[in-house]
Length: 597
Image 1: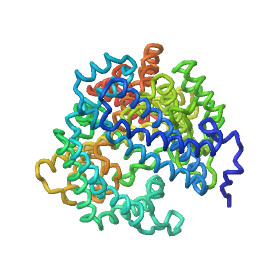
Image 2: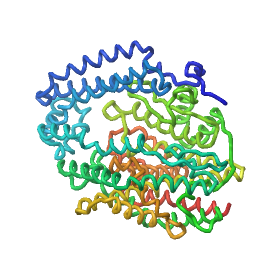
Image 3: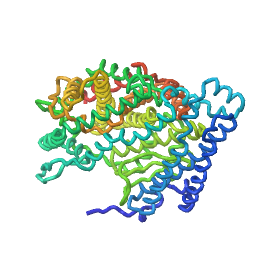
Image 4: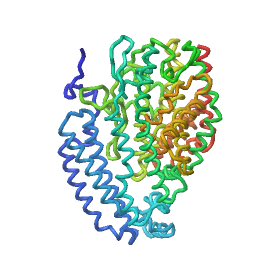
């Protein structure tokens, strides 16, 4: 039996170079002391923040200085912990950094309420009187834009005290779903008893033994159903608290409240649902093709995750993956691929699994580091090839934004976060489809690509439509019982999957399995981001240099503009059907290709 190696035994060239952030842990401790001194210095600005342009600029500069240092400490300590979760020193260091972050937010809590007392004229006069303050023009305008939703100091204090109560439904669900719920034990295809868990559930559904898939599917949803009244009440409580806070902050609806932070027009959300509704026939056609290829009389919900290409394996080492990604990203230009090559060669990436290392993959970093980082747990397969391309896309987005924008605008929001990563995946997919001569590999790739459309665009849009319907019902005074939630969800599943499917009644409880529903109106961004990325990758491959130039400007934009405007500048207007329809055209072509294969 193979065992994972300890962190201390991992080859240096296979690890990320976090010394580029802090050369020693002693410097982190010194940084914490420096940050604490900075936080104490903000008290002198309270009540005087807007007394003059010079005072405001000085306070905002000092805020940026503290924020950069706190962020640097937080990121470093957590990345050290992620490389070895059993390291007690980094457990303590990361815990200290979390407290420092909370203290920083508390120390600056007076800023937005004081800024919200300004008018547009006040801001213009302040900037005109002191040129350096122009740096913060957009930041100040954002506070003014949200001014009507910032309450007086007393109400803000009251709402902050209720925040712990407001998060109770989400915390209750997390505790139930992560700790308390227990799924039944079933026999795998070899007859070995295995308990179903969150971790192995999808593995069961991807297996080729239909009996195992069905038992796993029913085992999970019967378990959720046995708690349906509790889960329904908790779900409704979350809808109620979020709706109440939206109302208290003078938003037209909970949807408006959720989209306001990044100034996303509600039309973008509605356009996604409407456009996908107009193209539901493609999803239905894919279900028909899946049924045909699988050779089943009835296609059930537990048949959706089975790969249509069985028994395909392809080993791709990490070094081979790097070479393939570099080739696939050549359409983005020599400067882009040179930066990717630097990431691969100069220890931006922590490559392989070791004992205690965090699972999965991510890209992370901070403004004061010379570059972002990528955590991988690479194994030699196609999935990890795509994951590497995905995370490097995030890293390039972060690098270009932070090296182009000043600190206040160097970060980007979640609405655009998945665009850069998915563009890389799409370019990799098109490169592999163009270059492979292996028919089995081509079938695998087409299946892989189609499943991304099903799970990321259609499925996430279905989630988004469910949320909108539920919150609308709440606003209309409908009581959100578990039965109401289940009936609403079941009808949507039938709508999205069509007549080729037997929509098993158990799927009506799936709403209870989606943690993202406790962060209202979040999931739509997966569908919009994926649609935008596919549309951008298509334009990059068809238009060439001009499209690449627009795209790189987007990658360098950070939060210097509203995310919807950054995407418009890149050639994608998410308030229109065009980018979604362009993406779905790719999906349609894949369906036809798979049929011919």
